[in-house]
Length: 113
Image (cartoon, rainbow, N blue to C red):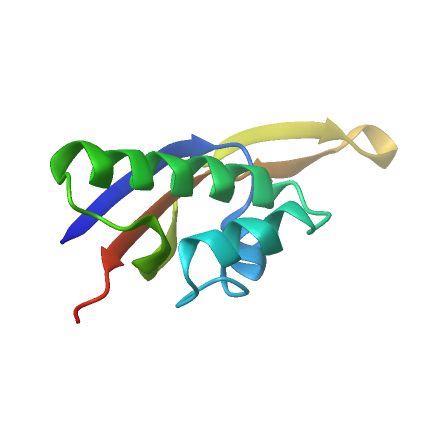
């Protein structure tokens, strides 16, 4: 059985979230949450939030799931909309700033056998 959870429009660049997400791909959910809670990155809080949501989705849809047998099947980050801003620069110019957003998707699955 699979369960999907998404968090959209995260105000952090996909590059920074992907760095943390690659540490937990393929791990069991309990091990991933333990590892993320010890990680000193802002993205880890978003990933823990989505993992807890995915586990809740699985528990609601299926009753006979063992929480120790759930692992992260797929996890990816897509780029969301970019907010374009301007910052004053020298000699009366302005330079562009791209404030990136992300869409985080995590698919968890219970092990077979």
